[in-house]
Length: 337
Ligand code: UT7
Image (cartoon, rainbow, N blue to C red; front, top):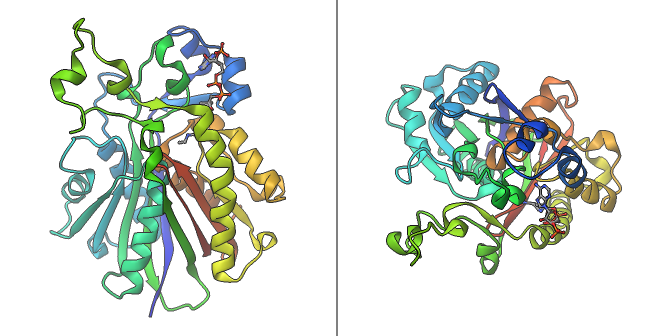
């Protein structure tokens, strides 16, 4: 039985940098509040009129990952695409990538697990590779949030946090026994689905009811993302350490064995809290939220790609990925680089 390992990584972020000062010009917010509460200094937006979609960003990240892996794109035998901001309500982005990359009629699966999307996607890739069904799987996490955010003071609790970007990995089979994904876990708690959600366009809310209230005003809570920030924060700081410890226990390791933890970049304060709870050093936790904000399903592959580029992860290192978000869903992956 083969193990699954990450053979190549790539990422892409749009060119337009939106600083906290830029946001001050369109809503009642300020740099001090955003930095103190989230650690974010700037994020990328595709920019209106530039017509970059989640599959466009995902394609650029994928091309870079394919080059980094040193494989021919036609060696890819399956696609998994994680996003909460697909180009179309249906079909998903996976098929768009199959077309844009000009691949044969290979399978393409879309994952709808928001901030945990990349953990779910990578775990799924691992299962397919271990089963012997596929050899090289393209896994993408990509988001264009900026087209769907309420960029007024009404939406400031959500809109200052999220950014656009994409990360991709080529996940391949290896016969090296102590290499690649060693353990993973995935969890969900759907009773909290509406604590972090977007109702539109969904079958729960009739289109007319959703878009037009009696006053013929859009129902802003349904057409834009809604987040009960404090509630999400409290659950995140509990679930992150649980999931990380579970992945370590399942593989027979301890926290001190980790070379690098790559947490989902939702909020710098969440990651600092988790670091403290697990007694990890600064150099064991990777952070890039100050540059990109929260890019949901893209945040882990972007951070992992940057971390590897910076030479902070070497072959043989123990690396842990962990995420928590809307659903609620959460999970963790432990791998030997
Ligand atoms: O990635 C998916 C998972 N998501 C997360 O993990 C996010 C978890 N939650 C959080 O990161 C934090 O809850 C937030 C960053 C979203 C919010 O931080 P907070 O410390 O929980 O602030 P708050 O929502 O309690 O708001 C505090 C105050 C409020 O004013 P009052 O009522 O105290 O007068 C807000 O209206 O801050 C106000 N506020 C803002 N002020 C300036 C909210 N957003 C802003 C803003 N600029 N952008």
